[in-house]
Amino acid sequence: MEFIRKKRERPHIEIAPLVDIIFLLLIFFMISSNFIAPTIRMDLPKALSEQKLEKVDLVVTVDRNASVFVNREQVPLDRLRTTLQERMTAIGKYDVIFKGDVHIGYDLFVQILDIAKLAGATSFSVEHAK
Image (cartoon, rainbow, N blue to C red; front, side, top):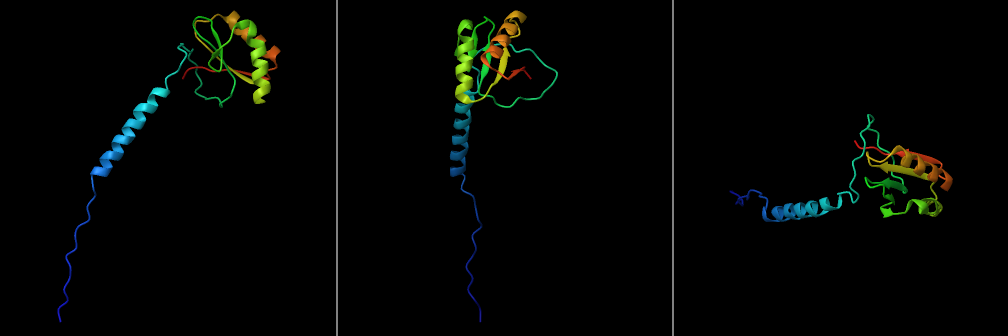
């Protein structure tokens, strides 16, 4: 007795859904890459160590024109102490990271360091470019 066997079709992969997924990924990465650009333009000094700092919620930034920013919000230098005190008590952290342009003066750096200490900062770190 002879059995009738059906012919097996070879499995195949549909290409159309894969192309759709690739285009969606391409669009996603193109749109999200625009959010990576920094909002404050500056030249950071280079350092020998490659160690990255942990994310801290309080960052003081000084750009080339000696404008002071606290977490991307511009703050006049005379209001920096009260702003730092308010932010530190609000987040419960007393750590400050300083990011400064390579062209700012040392006197401005020391002045901001003193203001941070008077505001109650227990830790003051300096971030550098890779």
